[in-house]
Length: 260
Ligand SMILES: NC(=O)c1ccc[n+]([C@@H]2O[C@H](COP(=O)([O-])OP(=O)(O)OC[C@H]3O[C@@H](n4cnc5c(N)ncnc54)[C@H](OP(=O)(O)O)[C@@H]3O)[C@@H](O)[C@H]2O)c1
Image (tube, rainbow, N blue to C red; front, top):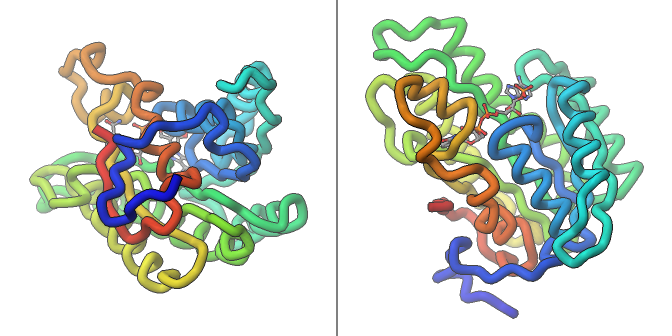
């Protein structure tokens, strides 16, 4: 079914069990929280998932979980692929190795989700630690930029590709004490807008999605005194992610969405 792109809302899309069938989708940070839930859900919806993360041991654990999955349409999930990359320490050759592997194996990439991020040290600007600031900006902005850049030829080779950046409400409007994290998410939003503008007439769409509050390690780090048990599980927030990666969001680009 064709959607009206102006009124498209990923929260209101009804998904088919095999919504992502035949798609090759790369997810950064698939070893915990929202990224892990997304990698599993993409596999359940029929995608072949590329797991991009820094710990091979943790990546292998998610790979094994996907191996054991049954898709929503009752078929066995396709095996995932592991692409080791530390977004803090990775060098050009590490990025190029992923791009080369994708080119050689599939010749295209249908989805790229910039999910991995770090919180840094929430504090007022006047006491932000400069090395931590640099690290947060690197992991949350520069690494997604560099990964997108090397994977653009593969994304352009797809008939229907989606780049999705996982944002935050403090990236939509800066908020006191969120420091480098808030600034990095604002910069990520801007990166995605620039990219969407540049890719306007191509088959590659680019959007951001703010998941809202979710029961993850990062949320616990940000709000240690909160009763995290009251927050939604990452698994319950996956439908809008899938809608933005699947065929129903074709033509929707340069937009900033909320999952809740
Ligand atoms: N949770 C929320 O309430 C919330 C709200 C708004 C936005 N978000 C956004 O949602 C996304 C996912 O957050 P989350 O809450 O699921 O976080 P999380 O549970 O802390 O998971 C973060 C993921 O990023 C990976 N990662 C961190 N540093 C990395 C590095 N240097 N290289 C490669 N991978 C790295 C982690 O890998 P390891 O397992 O190896 O550490 C992990 O897989 C983030 O973009 C976050 O900003 C979350």
